[in-house]
Length: 525
Image 1 (cartoon, rainbow, N blue to C red):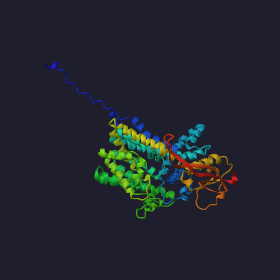
Image 2: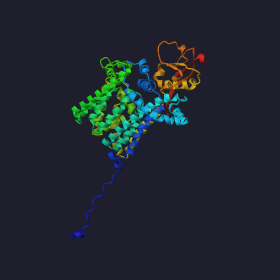
Image 3: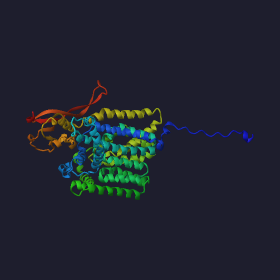
Image 4: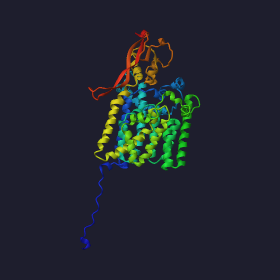
């Protein structure tokens, strides 16, 4: 056959991209990637607005942020009167207060231009009927917490996007969904716990490591250990061993150099800042490490838990169904195993310390969620097994909305009581007053941010021991309380347990009981 009569060879058809590949990895549009990041950010903001008050574990950083914003004289800061068992660093609180101060500076002219709208927003945010300029003091607490929530959400976005580049866009989306519907991650994202203040840097380190920058990650983790939370070393050590000795993805010399550089810079910064504020030469995390040394084990005075408490109680509550799925992800995906084993090793190391708290294992939660997301991505490939993934998400969200969120919302009676005192009695009082806050009120939300009438001469006293209560006009006291010199004018309820009621959907309800009384001296009748 003549060549001119031959038909040209037909080019093979281009492969049609599958739906799961349309926005894979780097090809995923930035706007779509940002939408998934908003899930965690939205959940963190929602929890912050639902529970605007803080508890005793957050007191140091809460008071430090308040004093940085409202108390010019360092000698009058709260930590000089109530220093605590060991000194803590001011770095995290000062950073959040600075960002809030900058944001508030730009928002203040808008608030002045729209006084009615700004007052309505403040009432909605803090739940107070306080007239300006009193409400902004309490609103500043919520504002600082919102700043922390946004910073944590930004760090989580860094982590999730790196996870998407490493394990695919579907795994990244599922990671965002799992983290958003869980309770503890978004709830504590805005809390002034030292562990929460350390979490943004930890998440940023994970993101850097997923992108192949293991040295940078070790430097960031070293800085966190040296300046904010020394117990992060329980996570940094297994990761360093895995990267430098097992995977050999990071040279030992580079890892050691980056770690020492991070530690050195963090120690220098901490010593300079904290020594000035504590009025003595101090490295806070160094003193914390010495106080919690395993030989003396003085932390056990705050309570002890069984060796398997993290495995049997803390992690199941924090992760729910994601915990067994993390095991599945580690078994199915080899690249997940170093992350899973490192997270597991950190939990094991912390299990040897008798005093245990959920916040100590915060660094392990994102890695276990990552492994769970990879497992869900494998299940998502099957249309039949997608039902299981949706069931996990739905069950986790239901536990958050039905159990954890209502319980947490009713767990801050001290803050609510102080706000009610001002709303119902404070602004109607012609002159200043003295208020005593007992231990329960101070440990359940009554912070210096809530002292709205300090500018009007009100004195807030939180001393304990034998006091002459007759000198006070109001008291916030734990029930039951009997004092003939005071009238109980209001009570505040707090979470007391869960109740099953088959006649009322969703059948499981959080119950409350009176915990704190607002007492008014009889001379003010």
